[in-house]
Image (cartoon, rainbow, N blue to C red; front, top):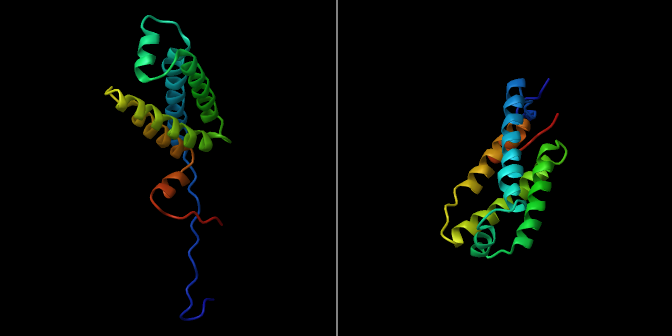
Amino acid sequence: MAEVGIETPSVQTVPVPTKGMRIAAWVITGVVAFFLLVPSAGGKFAEWEGKEEMFAAMGFTTELMWKIGILEVVLALLLLVPRTSFLAAILLTAYLGGATVTHVRIDDPFFMPPLIGVVMWVGLALRRPEIFRLAAGKSLSRM
């Protein structure tokens, strides 16, 4: 029995995702990974007319874009692995920040990289609900 005047701390547990949350999370994460792997990284590896000119306008060589494409593929695959997904999301946030700056610098539409980043974090947070708590500024207490 608690003594008068002494408060017992409330224990907050980390929420467990429901089955629906997990399904939605994997669908969202899969769509993000697909977009990063196929149209985005794929465009860096494929040969197409105007590729060198477009990359040059961004300030990149095709050789450098090939290396950036490899980085993008690695990060997209790491996002799909549960043990590495949080680190991948952090690194992809930085990567997408660089993509945003590149597009802004050449006065190109720049909404896609931030949109992909937000959707990626929502997908990850549905898999790991503690991310929502952290984003809201709440602490994580474990039993």
